[in-house]
Length: 392
Image (cartoon, rainbow, N blue to C red; front, side, top):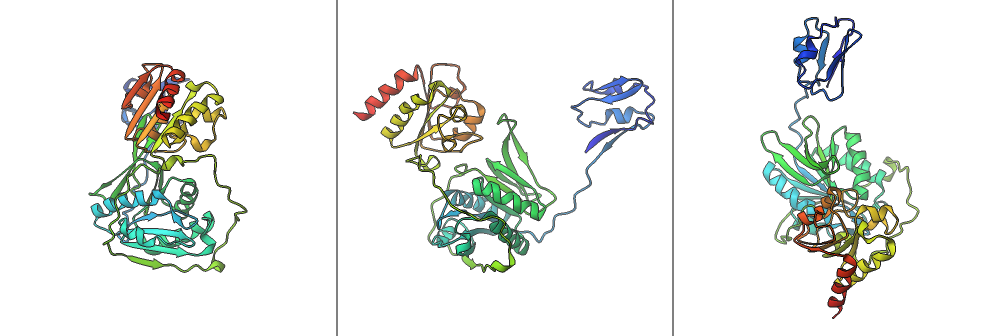
């Protein structure tokens, strides 16, 4: 959509200038110019006697085919073990499928997978399982081709996956191949039952607003969701479901990449996304050497070390420790924020923690607005006392 001015028809009468509610139209050399920020309200078009102004509208969307039914969750694996985000999405997917009165299916590609029954217990009605050594390392091009073909064959109306490194690389390929929409990094998913639309909510404008996005014209509706956004449910071992084993014909697909080696991140004793306790440091620590206090407190609590973005940008810690909108989303039982002011980008990644303790010498720091307990003080005095007490 957009607004268009036919300068050959414009007579420079100025009638449109007078009616613009936002004062975005000006006369230059007896011709009008519309500034940025136009809301396409149509007031100028209606006031133009020479019909020099027109508003282009989007073509009406075609009715969505009723052939598409079902909610799918792509469950990611590594070395035959399924990642937790798959179970989290199955819990939410079960809720969405029940609302739509349709089936929930899990899709799993990998090698040596032994958890297919667990996906049924987690809520899936069906599991599409491809167990082949070619998929052990999650080759994005092979996974993308296989998943796109499976979607074209079975026609689900919703496809969800985790916003992990693999999910962010894989699902855009699939969406592009299927010519459908994709919303990344969602923090909320609901159903508009009247129109069978997936309402996909995600942070926008640096986390300052929450945008709800829909895909009314194409199917499937696709979204990636950050790990730890939704809570996994307790498995129901009495649930019954169908495991559909898929064949893979290597000769029919082309792989453009080859994995040479996989180097695991061994810098974290406790994985950030799996930790029940996280001690995070921010710019207030001053320099990299002072993170020894954070590491010592995390070790005393049996927790993981986290960070806001500035220390990572400064090179004090690797990116894998970053919590926030451009880092990891975490949901621990205890989150201790030390010297972190609480920018909205950081809060987006940790504010769902069960208990938040904030330590900052600025009583007006935004972090205190989400904190369960706040300590206004010098972290270099507070942290040694906490460590000393815990060691006793």
